[in-house]
Image (cartoon, rainbow, N blue to C red; front, side, top):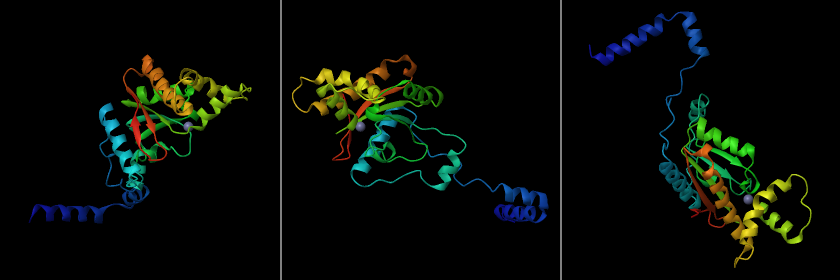
Amino acid sequence: MPSNRRALLAAATTALTATPAVLAATAAHPPPPRHTHPPPHPTTARAALAELLAGNRRYAAGRSRHPHEERARRQVLAAEQHPFAVVVGCIDSRVPPELVFDQGLGDLLCTRTAGQVLDKAVLGSIQYGVAELRIPLVLVLGHERCGAVAATLEYLRTGAPVPGHLALLVDGIAPAALRTRTARGDWADHTARAHTVRVRDAIRADPAFASAEVAAAWFDLDTGRVALLP
Ligand SMILES: [Zn+2]
């Protein structure tokens, strides 16, 4: 008898002789989905950045794949996660990292504050990703026409008192605004870019994140494209 036929017969015999208890246990714990391992994901900063930029090219071209949203992926991730990049971005509704980089469940660990301003909770969250989840890349993502930057410039222009918790944002963005105030061109654009680089440099200089590469990038609302900042 061919071996595959023997195996089939053995399986059928096992099924026929299974006790009610075994059958009940099988019903209560259905077999795991066929894909029991997450698909391969980047394990180096260089590969992680390449994956993000490739996903953004798909997004900007209107060819997003919306990967890793399927039920099987969700079930695998229920046990553990291995995101490959930390994205430190703005809360702006037009810049959701998973969409901008065409990634899905379990791919990115995102912290989002207005103007991607850092505070202790954000730093702790980044450290969780880098130290506990061993994520190789931290990407700071600034963007065009940032409302938090515009508000900061308005307070600096008018000298009006900054209400309540907004002071944290204005204090975080003001150094970049003051540094670019006399530069030729669009003050808001200069400020947003300089601030994004400043946030990157602050994370890069922090020994808590020494194991990760830290990069800064810029999102263009008009084209949907992300470009690395020098
Ligand atoms: Zn913003």
